[in-house]
Every structure is written in structure tokens, then in C-alpha cells.
Image (tube, rainbow, N blue to C red; front, side, top):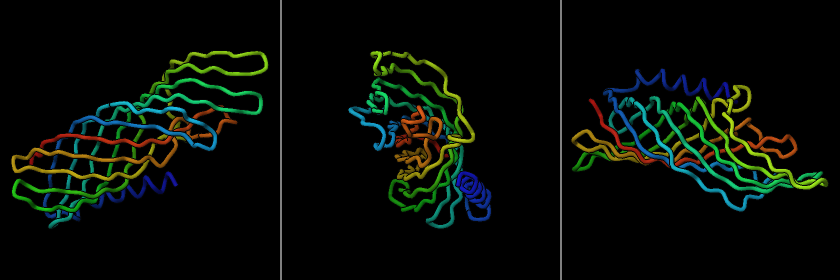
Length: 224
């Protein structure tokens, strides 16, 4: 599934040049709010809150009439904080975990454009691939067993694994405004399909896998 998804994204991106009658290049930057979540089958989550991150990138749009295909490269940093409890055959555990990750996202958005008096409104969405660059895991975990509780402190860089969790991929929904003075305002929602952090979500293997939802608000400027 991973290879076919990436190949599909690559094919769509390469096919853009044959689609558009006009070409537009934009720079964008803004903030995002990400929430990571595990499979409820194995974890009871008393609280799990997102955190604010940032993003910046370069987008290219190929337009024909009111239809546009947009792609590019966006650098993203997002984080999430969660507290959890888990039960197992020989005891359980509880604790807090703070995740911070850095990705380079390549989206392919299919947009519909509606002209207005101040410029135009665009909306649509599409798939994306996000390549993991770096990450960090911080937290404290208490393990409960017959010998008593044991607390472990974690503060370590995260190593992405190409076999299990890198790249991440998902789908994006986007709506935005393009003004006549070439300034842009974008609001988007990303839903990750693949498990992050080792690609696992099973207490029995001792690894916590997470998926992600990210809401982003960015401003930009179009060169032509």
C-alpha cells in the first residue's frame, strides 16, 4: 500500500505540467494544531491534548478554468501531549508522553476556484505524503507489577523507520482566499492514515503507534 500510494502521488505531480493553462507559485507560512491518537482497543486515554506547531513551504498551482491542481513542499513541525493508562497480562502502566516531529510534506490538492470581487475563493483537497525528518519523545511512565511500581523517564530522539512509519501519508481538505494583491489565506485539515512511531499500536509489543489529525492556518504570497 505504501509504495502504490507514493507512486500515485508522484504520477499526479509529474502530470501537472500537461494540465494547466496557467502556472502560479506561492510561499506560505503559518501555525498548526496537531493531535495524535492511539487505537482505543489497547489504550484508555483519560486526557490527550494537541499542541501548536509551525509550517512553511512553497506551493505550485496549475490552473485550467475554475479547476486547479496544487502541489509543492511544506516543512512542518507539530507536537502533541497525552496521558494514558494501559493494562496487560502481568500488570499495567500509566504516564505522560510528549511527541514532537518534523516532516516534509508533499501534497496534491484538487481545487475548485470561485471568483469574487476581492479575488477568488478556492476549496478542495487530496492526498499527501510526509517524509519524516526528525523527532523527539519525552515523558514519564510508571509500570505496575507484583514487585511494585517502577518509574522510567524518557527523553530521546526518535528514529524514523522506513519499514514501519516513514513516510506518513493521509488526506487533506483545504479552503482559502486569494486576494487581488496576491496575498493568500489558507485553512486546512490533515488526517493521517498510517501509524506513526514504529507503525504499531499494540500493548503486547511494547510500542505505541499513533495516527494524527492536524489543523493548519497559513498566510502566503503569490508571485505570478
